[in-house]
Image 1 (cartoon, helix red, strand yellow):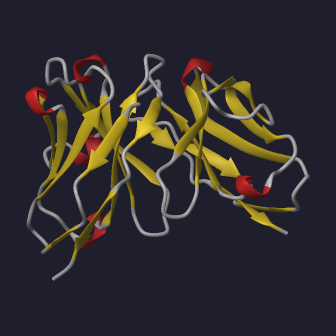
Image 2 (image 1 turned 180 degrees about the vertical axis):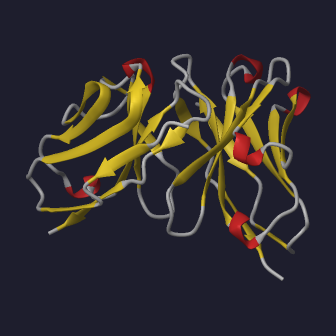
Length: 118
Length: 108
């Protein structure tokens, strides 16, 4: 079955960078987009962008342009999301999700809590 | 950016009752790209409905989605105990993809 397993929780200081991984299994990794979505404590869902594992193409939400980088390692069937210049507002659970052929984010990772604190 | 507004913010109902959740978009969207998610505490969202009205695999038929243009609705025909959760709508046809603020369905 499809599984997306994310890296563990992380604590960063303001101004630092964080890189979250998303290990995919159970399907052909290069056939489906990977989305990244975050959720601040007690808040709703916010879309950061998607990455195409086939060619590395990306589409970032304008809010995160210049601060987010989504990459992949096809040999490891792993997607990565790196966010730079962290502030306390970036404290959130970060989810990766696989888009189905219908484009909806159908399969989700378990989430990774990133805490930004001095 | 397309803004999605969900109402009500909280819905207090009893098991067995019908739940009707609304999602309105700031501009008309293709119904092909409107989804509903359920999220329980400490869990990732789970897709219930995509393309405005198509149930995702394994989703019970008490969940149904309707709507077009700017007005969309998720209906839960008879609430089961496991249905008490937060529900989000999302449009995924236009970048940036955006979510509504959520509706919490709680036990009355």
